[in-house]
Image (tube, rainbow, N blue to C red):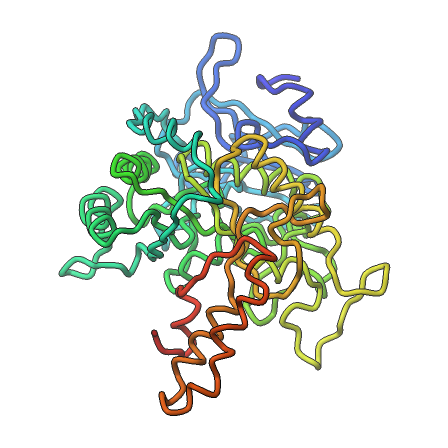
Length: 439
Protein backbone atom coordinates (compact mmCIF):
# COMPACT_ATOMS: atom_id res chain seq x y z
CA UNK A 1 0.00 0.00 0.00
CA UNK A 2 1.16 3.55 -0.70
CA UNK A 3 1.84 6.26 1.88
CA UNK A 4 4.31 4.01 3.76
CA UNK A 5 1.41 2.07 5.25
CA UNK A 6 1.67 -1.70 5.63
CA UNK A 7 -1.16 -3.99 4.62
CA UNK A 8 -0.70 -5.86 7.90
CA UNK A 9 -1.24 -2.73 10.02
CA UNK A 10 -4.41 -1.98 8.11
CA UNK A 11 -5.65 -5.55 8.42
CA UNK A 12 -5.00 -5.61 12.17
CA UNK A 13 -6.78 -2.28 12.63
CA UNK A 14 -9.94 -3.67 11.12
CA UNK A 15 -9.56 -6.84 13.21
CA UNK A 16 -9.40 -4.88 16.45
CA UNK A 17 -5.84 -6.04 17.11
CA UNK A 18 -3.68 -3.12 15.99
CA UNK A 19 -2.56 -1.91 19.40
CA UNK A 20 -0.39 0.88 17.99
CA UNK A 21 -2.92 2.47 15.65
CA UNK A 22 -1.62 5.90 16.68
CA UNK A 23 1.38 5.13 14.47
CA UNK A 24 -0.89 4.32 11.53
CA UNK A 25 -3.56 7.03 11.64
CA UNK A 26 -3.53 10.71 12.54
CA UNK A 27 -0.88 13.14 11.33
CA UNK A 28 2.52 11.46 11.03
CA UNK A 29 5.83 12.97 9.87
CA UNK A 30 7.09 10.44 7.30
CA UNK A 31 9.39 10.16 4.31
CA UNK A 32 7.85 8.83 1.12
CA UNK A 33 10.21 8.14 -1.79
CA UNK A 34 12.92 10.24 -0.11
CA UNK A 35 10.52 13.18 0.27
CA UNK A 36 9.71 14.36 3.79
CA UNK A 37 6.21 15.49 4.65
CA UNK A 38 3.13 14.70 6.71
CA UNK A 39 0.88 11.69 6.18
CA UNK A 40 -2.71 12.10 7.29
CA UNK A 41 -4.86 9.07 7.96
CA UNK A 42 -8.43 8.80 9.21
CA UNK A 43 -11.13 6.16 9.49
CA UNK A 44 -14.40 7.41 8.01
CA UNK A 45 -16.14 4.41 6.40
CA UNK A 46 -19.29 6.23 5.32
CA UNK A 47 -17.74 9.49 4.09
CA UNK A 48 -18.09 10.50 0.47
CA UNK A 49 -14.85 12.51 0.54
CA UNK A 50 -12.36 13.83 3.09
CA UNK A 51 -10.04 16.87 2.99
CA UNK A 52 -7.49 18.44 5.33
CA UNK A 53 -8.28 22.06 6.12
CA UNK A 54 -6.69 24.62 8.39
CA UNK A 55 -5.11 28.01 8.64
CA UNK A 56 -3.25 27.23 5.41
CA UNK A 57 -6.46 27.24 3.33
CA UNK A 58 -8.73 29.36 5.50
CA UNK A 59 -10.46 26.27 6.96
CA UNK A 60 -12.08 25.50 3.63
CA UNK A 61 -11.28 24.15 0.21
CA UNK A 62 -10.42 20.88 -1.48
CA UNK A 63 -6.70 21.40 -2.18
CA UNK A 64 -5.61 18.79 0.40
CA UNK A 65 -7.73 15.73 -0.44
CA UNK A 66 -7.38 12.30 1.15
CA UNK A 67 -7.69 9.11 -0.87
CA UNK A 68 -9.94 6.26 0.19
CA UNK A 69 -7.64 3.23 0.16
CA UNK A 70 -9.96 0.37 1.13
CA UNK A 71 -13.62 -0.57 1.31
CA UNK A 72 -13.53 -0.43 5.12
CA UNK A 73 -13.10 3.32 5.02
CA UNK A 74 -9.46 4.29 5.60
CA UNK A 75 -8.43 7.57 3.99
CA UNK A 76 -4.82 8.74 3.51
CA UNK A 77 -2.98 11.69 2.06
CA UNK A 78 0.64 12.93 1.97
CA UNK A 79 1.55 16.62 1.83
CA UNK A 80 4.92 18.38 1.83
CA UNK A 81 3.80 22.00 2.11
CA UNK A 82 2.42 21.86 5.66
CA UNK A 83 4.47 22.74 8.74
CA UNK A 84 4.57 21.71 12.37
CA UNK A 85 2.45 23.51 14.99
CA UNK A 86 -0.19 24.37 12.38
CA UNK A 87 -3.84 23.83 13.32
CA UNK A 88 -5.99 21.58 11.12
CA UNK A 89 -9.21 19.58 10.95
CA UNK A 90 -10.78 17.10 8.59
CA UNK A 91 -13.48 18.42 6.27
CA UNK A 92 -15.80 15.47 5.77
CA UNK A 93 -18.46 15.25 3.09
CA UNK A 94 -21.07 12.70 4.11
CA UNK A 95 -23.10 10.50 1.79
CA UNK A 96 -26.02 12.95 1.86
CA UNK A 97 -23.71 15.75 0.74
CA UNK A 98 -23.52 17.63 4.02
CA UNK A 99 -20.14 19.04 5.07
CA UNK A 100 -18.65 19.40 8.55
CA UNK A 101 -15.30 19.76 10.29
CA UNK A 102 -13.86 17.22 12.72
CA UNK A 103 -10.76 17.24 14.91
CA UNK A 104 -8.36 14.37 14.30
CA UNK A 105 -9.22 11.44 16.64
CA UNK A 106 -5.52 10.46 16.67
CA UNK A 107 -4.02 13.95 17.00
CA UNK A 108 -1.10 14.19 19.44
CA UNK A 109 -1.76 17.86 20.18
CA UNK A 110 -4.77 20.18 20.14
CA UNK A 111 -5.42 23.89 20.08
CA UNK A 112 -6.01 25.66 23.38
CA UNK A 113 -9.70 25.86 24.16
CA UNK A 114 -12.02 27.42 23.12
CA UNK A 115 -10.38 26.65 19.76
CA UNK A 116 -11.05 23.04 18.76
CA UNK A 117 -8.56 22.18 16.02
CA UNK A 118 -5.83 19.56 16.04
CA UNK A 119 -2.18 20.58 15.70
CA UNK A 120 0.40 19.16 13.30
CA UNK A 121 3.06 17.67 15.60
CA UNK A 122 6.75 18.44 15.69
CA UNK A 123 9.27 15.69 16.25
CA UNK A 124 9.86 15.40 19.98
CA UNK A 125 13.46 15.38 21.06
CA UNK A 126 12.71 15.00 24.75
CA UNK A 127 15.40 13.09 26.65
CA UNK A 128 14.05 11.04 29.54
CA UNK A 129 15.94 10.90 32.82
CA UNK A 130 13.96 8.15 34.57
CA UNK A 131 16.02 5.10 33.62
CA UNK A 132 16.63 4.16 37.25
CA UNK A 133 12.91 4.50 38.02
CA UNK A 134 12.01 2.23 35.12
CA UNK A 135 14.60 -0.34 36.18
CA UNK A 136 13.31 -0.28 39.74
CA UNK A 137 9.71 -0.67 38.55
CA UNK A 138 10.59 -3.87 36.71
CA UNK A 139 11.60 -5.55 39.98
CA UNK A 140 8.65 -4.36 42.09
CA UNK A 141 5.73 -6.56 43.10
CA UNK A 142 2.73 -4.25 42.78
CA UNK A 143 0.75 -6.40 45.23
CA UNK A 144 3.31 -5.94 48.02
CA UNK A 145 4.61 -2.41 47.54
CA UNK A 146 3.26 0.54 49.50
CA UNK A 147 0.80 2.67 47.56
CA UNK A 148 -0.34 6.00 48.96
CA UNK A 149 -1.98 8.13 46.28
CA UNK A 150 -2.41 11.90 46.11
CA UNK A 151 -5.24 12.66 43.71
CA UNK A 152 -5.08 16.02 41.96
CA UNK A 153 -6.96 18.00 39.34
CA UNK A 154 -4.23 20.10 37.76
CA UNK A 155 -6.68 22.80 36.73
CA UNK A 156 -7.71 23.66 40.27
CA UNK A 157 -4.89 22.51 42.56
CA UNK A 158 -3.40 25.97 42.50
CA UNK A 159 -3.88 29.07 40.36
CA UNK A 160 -1.70 32.10 39.71
CA UNK A 161 -2.68 35.45 41.20
CA UNK A 162 -4.25 36.47 37.89
CA UNK A 163 -6.33 33.28 37.74
CA UNK A 164 -4.20 31.52 35.11
CA UNK A 165 -3.37 27.84 35.41
CA UNK A 166 0.08 26.67 36.41
CA UNK A 167 1.96 25.06 33.54
CA UNK A 168 3.24 21.49 33.56
CA UNK A 169 6.71 22.94 34.21
CA UNK A 170 5.50 25.05 37.13
CA UNK A 171 3.51 22.15 38.53
CA UNK A 172 6.65 20.03 38.48
CA UNK A 173 8.39 22.67 40.57
CA UNK A 174 5.56 23.15 43.09
CA UNK A 175 3.36 20.03 43.21
CA UNK A 176 6.05 17.35 43.33
CA UNK A 177 7.90 18.68 46.42
CA UNK A 178 4.56 19.15 48.18
CA UNK A 179 3.43 15.59 47.48
CA UNK A 180 6.82 14.18 48.40
CA UNK A 181 6.91 16.08 51.70
CA UNK A 182 3.62 14.44 52.70
CA UNK A 183 4.93 10.94 52.09
CA UNK A 184 2.82 9.98 49.09
CA UNK A 185 4.15 7.35 46.70
CA UNK A 186 1.99 8.23 43.68
CA UNK A 187 0.23 11.19 42.10
CA UNK A 188 -3.06 10.41 40.41
CA UNK A 189 -4.06 12.94 37.74
CA UNK A 190 -7.66 13.53 36.76
CA UNK A 191 -7.99 12.99 32.99
CA UNK A 192 -5.57 14.94 30.82
CA UNK A 193 -6.88 13.94 27.39
CA UNK A 194 -7.98 17.08 25.58
CA UNK A 195 -11.46 18.23 26.57
CA UNK A 196 -13.47 21.34 25.70
CA UNK A 197 -15.06 22.15 29.07
CA UNK A 198 -13.02 22.96 32.18
CA UNK A 199 -15.75 21.96 34.62
CA UNK A 200 -15.92 18.42 33.23
CA UNK A 201 -12.51 17.89 34.92
CA UNK A 202 -11.48 16.02 31.77
CA UNK A 203 -14.07 13.25 32.03
CA UNK A 204 -15.72 14.28 28.73
CA UNK A 205 -12.90 14.12 26.20
CA UNK A 206 -12.55 14.91 22.51
CA UNK A 207 -8.81 14.35 21.92
CA UNK A 208 -7.91 10.96 23.36
CA UNK A 209 -4.28 11.08 22.17
CA UNK A 210 -3.79 14.79 22.94
CA UNK A 211 -2.51 15.76 26.36
CA UNK A 212 -4.48 18.89 27.16
CA UNK A 213 -2.89 22.12 25.97
CA UNK A 214 -4.23 24.02 29.00
CA UNK A 215 -0.97 23.52 30.85
CA UNK A 216 1.61 23.35 28.07
CA UNK A 217 3.00 21.13 25.34
CA UNK A 218 3.42 17.35 25.17
CA UNK A 219 7.13 17.76 25.96
CA UNK A 220 6.22 19.89 28.98
CA UNK A 221 4.04 17.07 30.29
CA UNK A 222 6.86 14.58 29.69
CA UNK A 223 9.03 16.82 31.87
CA UNK A 224 6.42 16.73 34.63
CA UNK A 225 6.22 12.91 34.59
CA UNK A 226 10.00 12.66 34.34
CA UNK A 227 10.48 14.86 37.41
CA UNK A 228 7.96 12.77 39.33
CA UNK A 229 10.04 9.69 38.58
CA UNK A 230 13.32 11.40 39.42
CA UNK A 231 11.75 12.16 42.80
CA UNK A 232 10.55 8.56 43.21
CA UNK A 233 6.88 9.44 42.69
CA UNK A 234 4.74 7.24 40.44
CA UNK A 235 2.16 8.76 38.10
CA UNK A 236 -1.34 7.37 37.61
CA UNK A 237 -3.82 8.93 35.20
CA UNK A 238 -7.58 8.72 35.05
CA UNK A 239 -8.55 7.11 31.74
CA UNK A 240 -12.10 7.31 30.40
CA UNK A 241 -12.98 4.59 27.86
CA UNK A 242 -16.64 4.42 28.90
CA UNK A 243 -18.00 7.50 27.17
CA UNK A 244 -17.17 10.67 25.26
CA UNK A 245 -18.77 14.09 24.86
CA UNK A 246 -21.11 15.15 22.08
CA UNK A 247 -19.32 18.28 20.90
CA UNK A 248 -19.59 18.70 17.13
CA UNK A 249 -15.84 18.62 16.48
CA UNK A 250 -15.40 15.33 18.36
CA UNK A 251 -16.16 11.66 17.75
CA UNK A 252 -19.96 11.87 17.63
CA UNK A 253 -21.34 11.01 14.18
CA UNK A 254 -17.78 11.29 12.94
CA UNK A 255 -18.47 10.67 9.26
CA UNK A 256 -22.14 11.60 9.48
CA UNK A 257 -22.98 8.23 10.99
CA UNK A 258 -22.31 6.63 14.40
CA UNK A 259 -19.00 4.81 14.03
CA UNK A 260 -17.38 5.33 17.44
CA UNK A 261 -20.65 5.16 19.39
CA UNK A 262 -23.43 2.58 19.37
CA UNK A 263 -25.99 3.21 16.64
CA UNK A 264 -28.79 2.10 18.96
CA UNK A 265 -29.48 5.18 21.13
CA UNK A 266 -30.62 2.95 23.97
CA UNK A 267 -27.05 1.64 24.18
CA UNK A 268 -25.26 4.73 22.92
CA UNK A 269 -26.78 7.44 25.12
CA UNK A 270 -25.70 8.14 28.69
CA UNK A 271 -28.47 10.64 29.32
CA UNK A 272 -27.59 11.50 32.91
CA UNK A 273 -24.06 12.47 31.82
CA UNK A 274 -24.97 13.91 28.41
CA UNK A 275 -22.42 11.66 26.72
CA UNK A 276 -22.18 8.75 24.30
CA UNK A 277 -20.94 5.20 24.88
CA UNK A 278 -18.21 3.67 22.73
CA UNK A 279 -19.26 0.71 20.57
CA UNK A 280 -17.11 -1.87 22.34
CA UNK A 281 -17.97 -4.59 19.84
CA UNK A 282 -16.59 -2.71 16.85
CA UNK A 283 -13.04 -3.86 15.99
CA UNK A 284 -11.83 -0.41 14.92
CA UNK A 285 -13.03 1.06 18.23
CA UNK A 286 -11.16 -1.65 20.11
CA UNK A 287 -7.98 -0.78 18.19
CA UNK A 288 -8.55 2.90 19.01
CA UNK A 289 -9.06 2.43 22.76
CA UNK A 290 -6.40 -0.20 23.43
CA UNK A 291 -3.87 1.80 21.39
CA UNK A 292 -4.77 4.82 23.48
CA UNK A 293 -4.12 3.01 26.75
CA UNK A 294 -0.71 1.83 25.55
CA UNK A 295 0.06 5.27 24.13
CA UNK A 296 -0.20 6.95 27.55
CA UNK A 297 1.82 4.21 29.22
CA UNK A 298 4.60 4.16 26.64
CA UNK A 299 4.76 7.68 25.21
CA UNK A 300 4.41 9.47 28.55
CA UNK A 301 5.82 6.77 30.89
CA UNK A 302 2.59 6.73 32.92
CA UNK A 303 2.77 4.07 35.65
CA UNK A 304 -0.89 3.18 35.81
CA UNK A 305 -4.41 3.90 34.64
CA UNK A 306 -7.48 4.37 36.81
CA UNK A 307 -10.16 3.12 34.45
CA UNK A 308 -13.15 5.32 35.09
CA UNK A 309 -16.75 4.18 35.64
CA UNK A 310 -16.30 0.49 34.81
CA UNK A 311 -19.86 -0.34 35.90
CA UNK A 312 -21.22 2.12 33.34
CA UNK A 313 -19.52 0.06 30.65
CA UNK A 314 -20.57 -3.35 31.91
CA UNK A 315 -24.28 -2.80 32.47
CA UNK A 316 -26.63 -1.87 29.66
CA UNK A 317 -29.09 -0.16 32.00
CA UNK A 318 -26.54 1.70 34.09
CA UNK A 319 -28.10 4.82 35.61
CA UNK A 320 -31.30 4.46 33.59
CA UNK A 321 -34.44 5.81 35.22
CA UNK A 322 -37.61 3.76 35.58
CA UNK A 323 -39.15 5.75 32.75
CA UNK A 324 -36.42 4.80 30.27
CA UNK A 325 -36.63 1.68 28.13
CA UNK A 326 -34.47 -1.05 29.66
CA UNK A 327 -32.28 -3.33 27.55
CA UNK A 328 -31.50 -7.03 27.90
CA UNK A 329 -28.82 -9.03 26.12
CA UNK A 330 -29.39 -12.17 24.08
CA UNK A 331 -29.31 -14.24 27.26
CA UNK A 332 -31.92 -12.19 29.07
CA UNK A 333 -29.54 -10.26 31.33
CA UNK A 334 -28.49 -6.61 31.39
CA UNK A 335 -24.75 -7.21 31.03
CA UNK A 336 -23.02 -5.62 28.05
CA UNK A 337 -21.16 -8.72 26.93
CA UNK A 338 -19.17 -6.75 24.36
CA UNK A 339 -17.84 -4.51 27.13
CA UNK A 340 -16.91 -7.55 29.25
CA UNK A 341 -14.92 -8.97 26.33
CA UNK A 342 -13.31 -5.61 25.59
CA UNK A 343 -12.15 -5.04 29.18
CA UNK A 344 -10.63 -8.51 29.39
CA UNK A 345 -8.87 -7.96 26.07
CA UNK A 346 -7.67 -4.52 27.22
CA UNK A 347 -6.07 -5.87 30.39
CA UNK A 348 -4.50 -8.85 28.65
CA UNK A 349 -2.88 -6.59 26.04
CA UNK A 350 -1.73 -3.94 28.53
CA UNK A 351 -0.10 -6.47 30.85
CA UNK A 352 1.53 -8.20 27.86
CA UNK A 353 3.33 -5.00 26.92
CA UNK A 354 3.58 -3.36 30.38
CA UNK A 355 3.51 -6.13 33.03
CA UNK A 356 4.28 -3.85 35.99
CA UNK A 357 1.68 -1.14 35.53
CA UNK A 358 -1.33 -0.48 37.73
CA UNK A 359 -4.67 -1.13 36.03
CA UNK A 360 -7.27 0.00 38.53
CA UNK A 361 -11.01 -0.38 38.10
CA UNK A 362 -13.10 2.46 39.47
CA UNK A 363 -16.14 0.27 39.93
CA UNK A 364 -19.23 1.01 42.00
CA UNK A 365 -20.83 -2.41 41.54
CA UNK A 366 -20.61 -5.57 43.65
CA UNK A 367 -19.47 -7.58 40.63
CA UNK A 368 -17.08 -10.38 41.68
CA UNK A 369 -13.70 -11.23 40.10
CA UNK A 370 -12.88 -7.69 39.02
CA UNK A 371 -9.22 -8.24 39.95
CA UNK A 372 -9.09 -11.94 39.07
CA UNK A 373 -7.07 -13.01 36.02
CA UNK A 374 -8.96 -13.40 32.77
CA UNK A 375 -8.09 -17.11 32.64
CA UNK A 376 -10.16 -17.46 35.83
CA UNK A 377 -13.05 -15.61 34.17
CA UNK A 378 -12.08 -12.35 35.88
CA UNK A 379 -11.89 -8.91 34.34
CA UNK A 380 -8.10 -8.86 34.68
CA UNK A 381 -7.51 -5.63 36.61
CA UNK A 382 -4.91 -5.73 39.37
CA UNK A 383 -6.73 -3.32 41.73
CA UNK A 384 -10.24 -2.11 42.41
CA UNK A 385 -11.26 1.12 44.11
CA UNK A 386 -13.37 0.04 47.08
CA UNK A 387 -16.30 2.41 46.75
CA UNK A 388 -18.25 0.54 49.44
CA UNK A 389 -15.53 1.21 52.01
CA UNK A 390 -15.65 4.88 51.14
CA UNK A 391 -19.42 5.14 51.43
CA UNK A 392 -19.53 3.21 54.71
CA UNK A 393 -16.69 5.20 56.25
CA UNK A 394 -18.23 8.56 55.41
CA UNK A 395 -21.66 7.42 56.60
CA UNK A 396 -20.09 6.36 59.92
CA UNK A 397 -18.26 9.67 60.33
CA UNK A 398 -21.47 11.65 59.75
CA UNK A 399 -23.12 10.01 62.76
CA UNK A 400 -23.23 11.77 66.08
CA UNK A 401 -20.41 10.18 68.13
CA UNK A 402 -22.88 9.13 70.80
CA UNK A 403 -24.64 6.90 68.25
CA UNK A 404 -21.59 5.41 66.53
CA UNK A 405 -21.30 2.44 68.90
CA UNK A 406 -24.44 1.00 67.31
CA UNK A 407 -22.98 1.27 63.81
CA UNK A 408 -19.47 -0.17 64.04
CA UNK A 409 -20.54 -2.62 61.34
CA UNK A 410 -20.04 0.20 58.86
CA UNK A 411 -16.33 0.00 59.60
CA UNK A 412 -16.03 -3.75 60.07
CA UNK A 413 -18.19 -4.99 57.21
CA UNK A 414 -15.47 -4.47 54.61
CA UNK A 415 -13.33 -7.03 56.43
CA UNK A 416 -15.89 -9.63 55.38
CA UNK A 417 -14.87 -9.33 51.74
CA UNK A 418 -11.52 -7.58 51.82
CA UNK A 419 -9.69 -10.69 50.58
CA UNK A 420 -12.04 -11.30 47.66
CA UNK A 421 -10.41 -8.57 45.54
CA UNK A 422 -7.22 -6.51 45.50
CA UNK A 423 -8.64 -3.31 46.94
CA UNK A 424 -7.50 0.27 47.13
CA UNK A 425 -9.27 2.39 49.74
CA UNK A 426 -10.11 5.75 48.14
CA UNK A 427 -11.30 9.07 49.48
CA UNK A 428 -11.35 10.95 46.21
CA UNK A 429 -13.04 13.73 44.25
CA UNK A 430 -16.21 11.63 43.95
CA UNK A 431 -16.78 12.02 47.67
CA UNK A 432 -16.79 15.82 47.75
CA UNK A 433 -18.99 16.73 44.75
CA UNK A 434 -22.73 17.11 44.25
CA UNK A 435 -23.24 18.74 47.60
CA UNK A 436 -21.26 16.21 49.59
CA UNK A 437 -18.83 17.30 52.27
CA UNK A 438 -15.18 16.38 52.73
CA UNK A 439 -14.12 14.04 55.51
